[in-house]
Image (cartoon, rainbow, N blue to C red; front, top):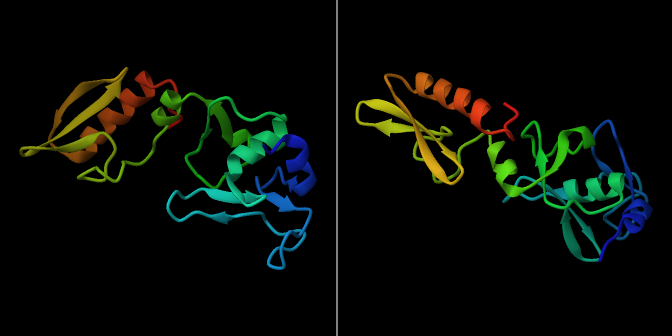
Length: 161
């Protein structure tokens, strides 16, 4: 298992950018001073390989800075999956992490978080403790989005919008 001592031997953490900078060159493709890892196009997160195993860079940053693996999931507070500055990362349970979603999932028919068409109007709803709470029907999708964001800020303590 990778530990903090190994990570600190292999990488320097740049506080200004949140990047892990290589201190060693494990292959001919890597150079000392390079930003470690590459962006996984499927997930949008930077992945860093150590001993042929890929690790999410944000979890390695947490380990590097705090000396222990995160107990839960790492949430990017500002929603930017590549912003691994330690002040943008928090160790939170899954339920809190999903409360900080800023974009709809791929299964959304509208591409708008919490909002969907309902007849000739727009319906807003939010998930709270595993149950759907209906926020109302609105003439415009902008009104429905505003209702959703207001409810999200009030009901989801993990939300940083």
